[in-house]
Image (cartoon, rainbow, N blue to C red; front, side, top):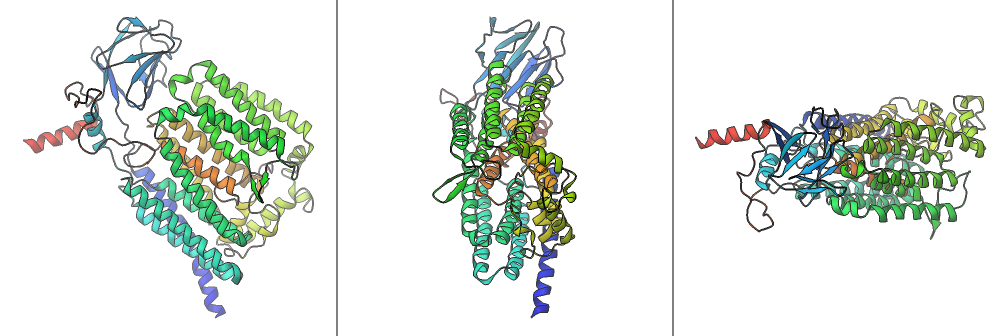
Length: 595
């Protein structure tokens, strides 16, 4: 019997490693092999040249970063912004250009000017004619774009993830006490059912891209394993929190479908974030120098985790708002209030993560390195003051790189984490067979070491690689996002998650100062898990591939949308196929069939 159990454990350990590598490979291959074609929403024509509008907000100017680059001396580097809302209405804004912007001979004011097909735009001595795309043209453009999940079947990848979770169940069944084996098994079975229900719902909505969710469920499975090892008595609570997190992810994706609604609720969301931080400052109790938690009804809650999603929701903005200084100053003020509140409760690790996220958003919103430099200078001063006022922060910096000099004092947690990670080797001891989870905060602040000890260094590195793959996905998708809101939100969310992961991994291994932040999805904690799934909605909303994201409205599969008069639009109004190889190929194929 013992030989059989040893064989089962060894087999499941290798299965976990092989399946982890397969899941990562298939997700990465799917993201790399599929084309990311831009959508076409209209064009500007000028003296025989045609400029395609592939975004809902298009920067017009001489700068290399302009969406419509006009290399003429009369055009400013950032001259105008041409913006479309989700109702199909276009407006053009003058963003402090030297020569101004005119539409049909009327100068554009601060509130912008609406554009319709055929309108004449004058800027910098140039005359441009605006053409909006018709619903029929958008439908044809959608038809020739590559569908997500075309080269790598998401169903097979999800099946591999299910086998990975079954292998974890086998390991926990061998290590857990009899009274907890049932609850651990049921929790993992519920997680498997949840991911398949989520995938089935996507398929019913004609969505085929599922790489982001697969990686998130992979990391959540590792988090479930950590919870089963450290607190097996809370497994039912853990799966309920996971269901709630996924439900909020789906709701957030639906909410982000409407850009107008999203922007309309920026102020209420900002007020909610500040209210949560204010309650945290006033009502929380200090634990080990920090006051991160609120307790009510026997349950604890970490407001700063929810504020992360609120912060990105508020900080991201549509392009025509980016160049108004009052909006940028308002965001800076909002950021300062959040960071000050985090400093007051002593959560400097999260404050650092917020600051990194602020740098990403402020640069993507303003494009100004000067703004980033000023922010970094202010942060350096704030960091110096924090070290002066909070001695235990300076102690963490003093311990950095010297953990082994005080293994029973300041370096206690990190030395145990490094020892446990090393003892796991490449394949690990098996889920639930480790000893590090008995150390305080091991399942949160040192969770990377827990995974390395129990599941092996290879799985630990796969855990990190999953985050890097999602980061690559977010950056690549950002180039083709419809509205500037979605790429900024996705890149900011990924920057937040990556900085959080880096501080957790390198801090527990004494490569960076120990800050006590969680590893996304994997560290135990309901607030952190919900926050991570909410951030995934931003990353998913930037995925503009055909049939990839439920957060992106797709063109109708048949028929044409009606205009305001209830009649189908004229198909000869504009030909946006010019210069577009995808539509030209479609037209050539259609011509050959007809002849």
